Image (cartoon, rainbow, N blue to C red; front, side):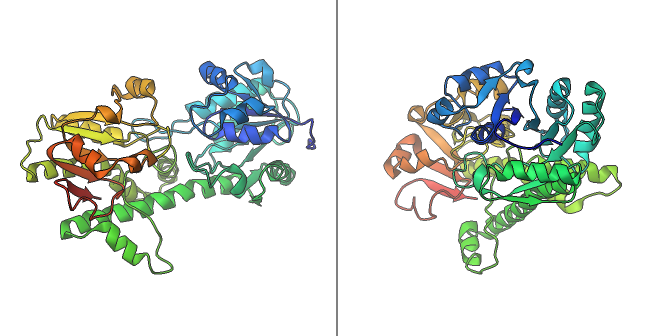
Length: 431
């Protein structure tokens, strides 16, 4: 088994939201190479540009990290860390293609005494069931004899500048006790918050997947409460603020649930649960409620227009925000797109703005042309889908100038106080 030192060579496979920050930190302690199959991504990073906005241009220019899309450049690494996404397909079944592809890449350069660490979120058992056989078959090496594996789930929160890699405790595991110790030593060297060892890779996999399931189920509960309170004519945020004065009331908020984690991870455990003969009821119910929120919000918008005497057919509706969360360019599994689709089915005229989203990406993936907010005029309704910080600078008079007479704001994130628009002709409804 290898011993860590400054000459230890680390290869990070995948340089997205998870891999890039990890590679930057590893390069401060070890000889580190970041590998990504996306040549444009590598080119941008070499030029100091990170499209994820996680790493500054200054940091990219100063780092000793080597960037490459050539497999030969990682052929002599001692430790490989795989940080690729684990999405679901159109039927919400686990899609292991990116993980399997990355594993095949590592397999081609795997040598004796190497350790392969996975950070991608999967269900319990997936690393050793899906990845290890590929490593053995292509490399010709024997697991836990010639090479070893570890699992240390990512806990990156895109766009969050407070809960970053170095100040979040890292769960670590290995294919044997000595491997676990090395994985723990590796991460402890870059993470002041420290590590938490567990007894097996499966335990670490399970711990990761339920972190997001717990959030998903709790948000689903609040979303269901919001729908009930709406029917009762109660302001959800005021109710939650009042309930939150109790010390043990958990501060979840209603809204859309997208992204690469919370809206995806439950399907991985559900898939595995069904395989072993258990039908998960609470997890499934939570997913059903949260997946239905886009339709609920678009239906509420139609109802608000109708109540205002505005014909939804042809009504001009501006959506503010299309990424999956505020102050972040990440478009993965955004549910705002579902709002757009539902409104188009009602023959509404929908326009979308977002200061963070990549215009080319949005056009290619969703056939939506983003516009700047200064071009939004004469609309009948605004759906404030995300609480981007830029929207705080919009004054009341500027909001009034956006509308065609009496306007409607559907405030998904409860961005405004309930009395903010009382002196205007704008009708404000918040989730």
